[in-house]
Image 1 (cartoon, helix red, strand yellow):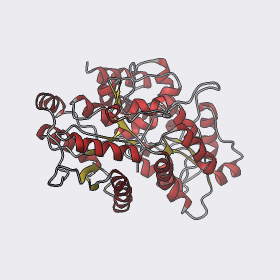
Image 2 (cartoon, one colour):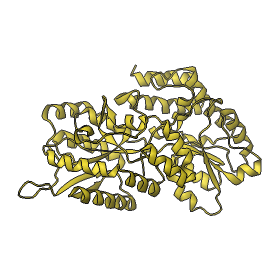
Image 3 (cartoon, one colour):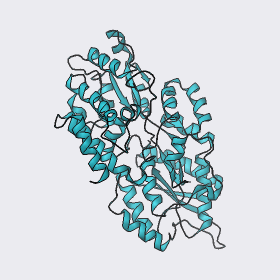
Length: 416
């Protein structure tokens, strides 16, 4: 569940310009939802990437309920995450888009740019009560095209027993993190684990360290960015973090944690269900450390947005919009958050949720100031993200210093 689990490997831009021209020139023809003989809309189509059998069924039930409230049957299809954006771009070009479309929030910019989506204010849907970061994630050129019922981000998970045994407090600063990780490292166990692989997932995990220290994807070769990258280099060089982080996914990091092979990790709340089921694992979660006291923690925003594509039937678009509104009402937000260990997107609902589920409090707090990955660069974000994970790889392998790696990252980000 959530884009934070899979925040990364779905960035397809090669078809972008061609599709943008095709959609802008031709307009979008429409989905394949059915209507009765008198023109009344009786069903609409929906597309997402929830291919896991259980997750697909759960979302199918929710879409069915919201469809019923809107007076339609929802024909629900799921495709693999890596296939969704390429398929949507093809469907936009051929004017066969679904009536209701889910997108990982960083993908919304490139799809909205083609003209394939409709702004939600057309249907009376507003983003009142959402944080600026959440609204930004669904916005293109000042218009909100998508809303996420729930969102996610990352935090620091720690093994309570290991920290207690070592007499280590939960770290709040980078120096405390390095000290704690060193003291928690034992034969067969590392003190700290992150996902530093060469995908956007690796970038996602690095962003809190970059952003919270004043680094910025609009200019990667800065002292602030180098300090953040140096932290990860120091953890690997000291032996407090495995060199294998270069290849680990977030799922691998989780597996290391539950197996007792790392005492702390960066990960998301979607891991909680599995950790709760792990015998004798006593874990806690806290906000990620910042370089020095007083800095504001900034984390990236994960979550899928629901959108209403352009088509030739305004009646179907209105029905789809009613389903989007239903998915984003407070009761569905809370139910989805409880089901998937995510954070309700409306701040008032999130506050109630944090009181009900204390283990989610750190994530609710972080989401309040979380930033959309496309918030500053829009459709240019994928190039910067590529530059970031390339720099992380080069620095952690020792191929380049953090400063050299980030200079190269800046050239990638600017296409120079």
